[in-house]
Amino acid sequence: MSSGLTIIPNITIHPAQILTWNEYHFAKPRARHKYLSTSEEEVLAAPEKFIKSSRKANYLVSKNAKKKLNRAIDYLLLMSNQKTFKEIYTGRSQQFRVAFITLTLPSNQIHSDNEIKNKCLNSFLIELKKVYKVRNYVWRSEKQGNGNIHFHILVGKFIPHQELKDRWNRIVNKLGYVDRYRESQKNWHRKGFRVRKRLIQTWPESKQKEAYIRGSKYQWNSPNSTDIHSIKKIHNIKNYISKYITKNEDKYLRYIRTNLVLENKLKVENVADNKNKLCFKKRSLSLKIRRLKKKYSNSGRIWGCNTQLSNISGARTVLDTPISSELEYIDNTFHPNSFSDTYFSITYIDFAMLNSGRTPVLLRLFSLYLFRQFNFSLQSELAA
Image (cartoon, rainbow, N blue to C red; front, top):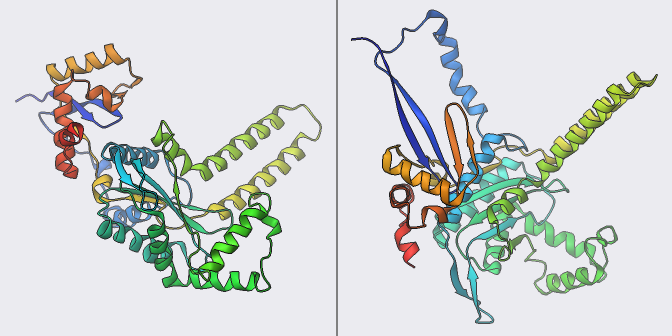
């Protein structure tokens, strides 16, 4: 039998994009050459290399990780439709979709990043799943300006702020962070209210006085270590969240780009001391980059999500005539942005395009994938 090549067109559907690509099959496997063989040493070294390359980027999220992070957010937002809840104190009805939570340490960090993640963040996520039935979540760790680690968490459940704060404070106090906060505050205000002058620009005296009254009322046992960001008026939630949780590294990369431009400018300047200027600039840039790395260094995993969101593959099938017709309809009707390469093409969509009523095959394929992967019924949500 003669060897031959078979090309099978495929399609993968996600909430914000549709990927089409070709799968190549050979009738006969090609002969392996000696220079392609893997040595025993390389095979034994592979697991160690894989472990060292897992999501431990110190402080920067790679391009590939950003794609995975944004895709996880896409799915979480899709499965978090608008809900209504009543406020406990006012009784008013409020619209709610997702909660974007920030968790901070009440006092200066004295444990390693990994210890806080293992003993505090992990316990908090376990309680969210058990108590509030949170199924899908995405988290990201960052460093604050004071060197403390903090966490951003996106969930599709409503959690009262006071309950959230009490739960996080109880968990971090296993490592003594609330106790140290209480002692610090009592010592600072031992003679009554005292203004923190170095914070006056970002924290006015009136606000400091309010915090003092509130803190002393609870004997400094309830530090304001949590925040729930309001995203009611934000149109593009995914972009807002993605930019918010990568703002430190964006600042870092902007700084490097700016200094590289200045460095290139020095190279082309026709001045006598150009070489000395360039060497000084390089030393200065290297020093500042090292300081930024130290400031924002974040050991261990810097982001994560629940198992189902981490194993996203999308709704995949063979590209046939009915599906091709529906893709053509989307392209001609909505004119979405797209990108094409030799081996694949990407169409950037909005989920409303699949739910237009004119793409039943694509919608059914994607609905079946959501049910298999997340046990989530898209039809029932759309009906509601």
